[in-house]
Image (tube, rainbow, N blue to C red; front, side, top):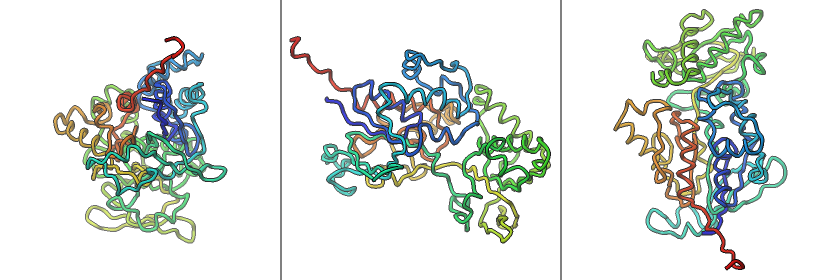
Length: 424
């Protein structure tokens, strides 16, 4: 087998590690990044990661960086998202084998097969002609004209953090949601840092009860305690009705194994129970928003019995999860799970393991790699890697993605070494 042209979408932790493995295997690799390297980690900023450094990096990556004289964090050190980007992802991108492979500001807007269309040449029915047609990728650079790129293999490692879930009933947008503009934030902001002026003293509608919401509660508590105008901060908190639980239930094994997560769970639940500046709306749903003449937002909430309440807030912080961008490969033959929107082979394997050992696979730490076959899709040589491979299922860890990379390259293979004719 000769070297193959591998196109990777996304220069985050999965894309960079996959590129490093691909180059080491002897393939031609290009990584298209719509913004900057590790962009999603940059956006997540000062939020502490709840897993230690050795779970967020690979042996190959650490080995190459140490050989280049880079001082790395300790294996058990817990970093923020920003710190992982600065101390690992950016140095990784500067390695000689990756420096020219990564193209920042190059957004992949669509992927297809050259010379055919989605309905033709169905590989699942035994027609193998699609495999001989290269992929074509539409690239929209931040500067300059759009162009096409071609590849033999495509790895989608674009993640899910760029596509937030809607805030309305049943996963639909609430009426008026699109009109909120910058008043609606769907990523965890640096409340005590760059976003302080937006939140100090404001009336906030907080949606969600997962780990991002827990971090928001902790950050808002620090803001209120700082005093001054920030002491007037008020939060209307809409979350699922979990009975006695407050934040999203986390398996006890994870709380015992991950000190950062254990401390976050303890602090957020204590604040949520004691803070006078929080008003709860358990089980409520946002049905609509209306921007008033004063600039305030009128949000209509419906409780579980359908009774409506209107509240006025200044901002909406919606931390209700993320979903994969499926438009990217709309013209390819990808079989997706009807529930999670993950690739069907992997989704089926995850579901099977959950049914077999439900207690063992709760949360992130219970997830395991399901082998090379779970990485396949009906579209030959197209792979979804990382958090996007889990679709809407949030139970994904970077260490699991690293195992996916190893599985993936058993499928892609490595070029056979060239014979030295002169030596013969």
